[in-house]
Figure 1 (cartoon, helix red, strand yellow):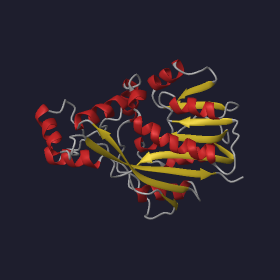
Figure 2 (figure 1 turned 60 degrees about the horizontal axis):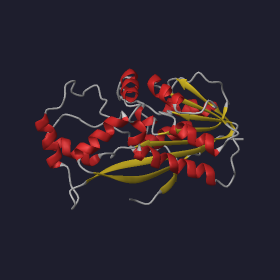
Figure 3 (figure 1 turned 90 degrees about the horizontal axis):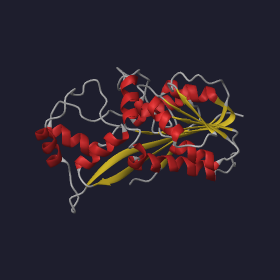
Length: 282
């Protein structure tokens, strides 16, 4: 694991709009909705990255006493509930693109949390309506994080705090390499933006924000176990260029043979993690 490096966001390359969506939003909503019953038991990475942000919010020099908190891309509501416990006097709102995720969150949460199905790029919420906006591992599913950052800036009250986590290029590189050998020329893993692209979009929408990056690694019993966890999260391959039929068993076996293994036969998956921390001006 590399050491965390906190950097002031600077535009390191000219902004160029993405060539196309990662996937249609309807597909993203459907796949995550299909995983709503298995999501929380599989969300090891999500918990780890979200807890980094909660720790920062709890341990900041200026103790926060928010009245309104937004969990953007709340999924099944794990961190919406966590934020509600952190600040019992605050009203927490959880927003997600998937109706099934919101139903699941509502069913397993107390009534004092509000739930909303909405697109993060066009939120039907009033300006300056939240003291804290929290978004854990959501923006990597957006073709361009810029409009989401702009929405977050619009929603924050003066003196508010934005905490966002995402994944960057190099994530699941072991899986990418194994599939490249087993099935050349055919992508099998979602694309992720480069750190320089994220820095540019942060600098353009959130002046003065910091971006922290770190490589996280999680162990798995096998490449098949990794693929199963991604499916349980709803985080399977979403590109419009994916095969519309099941991948042939022979290709899967070939991928497994190409995947690097530890001495004990287990495998490691690397995740290039990034956290954005921004405070709106008073």
